[in-house]
Length: 228
Image 1: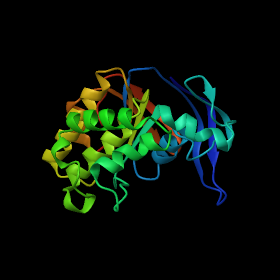
Image 2: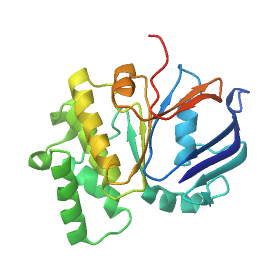
Image 3: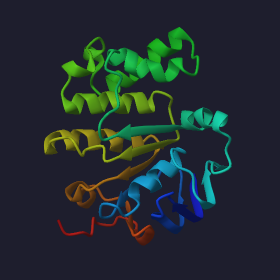
């Protein structure tokens, strides 16, 4: 599903964020990306949905070299990729239903299909009864559930989560992780950058550790591996 071949990323200020990465992630895998702050995790994650481009090397997503992808084709790439952020990134003037429906409206899906699919995913994340509420009326955990619903409404092949539990209390974090496990069980590939040691150590999946822009550890069913 995802391949990085000798990927480098050097920013204009001279910082080398990725220093020759080689990695493959198969369809249906659940992968944690761990490492200290500034290690290159965010750049690694952003490469996958073309928020960043490699300075050199090959970046393949579902067989497409997205480093060479024309900007006008990026929205089509992102239809197959759901992204969940630490700060939710919901549209404050839209209610829960509208926030999720927006992802289908931009691809001009039929209104009846939108209605059915949005209510389906809101039911899945336990927020069907709050469809008409606005983000400001929801707790942090509920806002993240809306973000997850929005990310899966297109039935993406890949779901990318950048510190999705970073702003949540422990109990809510586990609720969110249970959702990710459920989504992964349907065959969706999940790639999650996290600093949450407890989650990584309890819900064992593949762990890729990045330090100084290099992959220093790649372990199936690995642990977090860093001291607090």
